[in-house]
Length: 115
Length: 112
Image 1 (cartoon, rainbow over the protein chains, first blue to last red):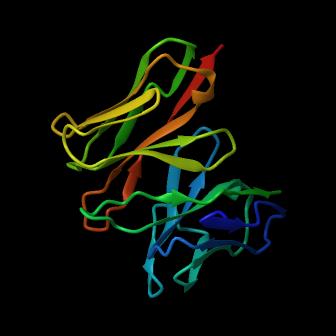
Image 2 (image 1 turned 180 degrees about the vertical axis):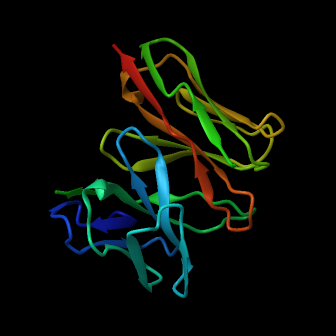
């Protein structure tokens, strides 16, 4: 079974709709992340969470919100989707090792198209 | 500004050849990560380099880290088609959050 799962895997929606992307993990990690990837580009961090009570904005948080429902669940919402939010979205998890390091483990991704 | 620069960004090569991908970064981090991504797929962790001089090898791939030069290399030996993918490097940010700073990725195409 996959350690980090994302639902849905593909979603087509229309401008102005509210969309929620969900991420679940069985790795027992405290840290969870949402990234966005556009074709030919690297990863950009949207939000991250170090525990249930700790939510932080990344470099491109405008137009997005998140909810950390439990240690294992981290959801990303687009309150009013717009076409330039069409992208591949990844959830990732990590747990600082010893010595501290931040190897992240990624879910399979959600391909979102906003028409 | 914190930067992680990879070069080349695109590489097309023949099977059997050797080549190196470079990852330069501007932070003082001594931790660097290499990931692989197949087209339309997720990112898979390849190597975690945790100190100056660290070298790790897996099959035809070898990664090294020179923290003084702020440079990591990913060397491909006798390339095979199955290694075609996009390779990303990332480093820990300078604060205690250990946020990763990502390079733009190197798209590698290996032709039979």
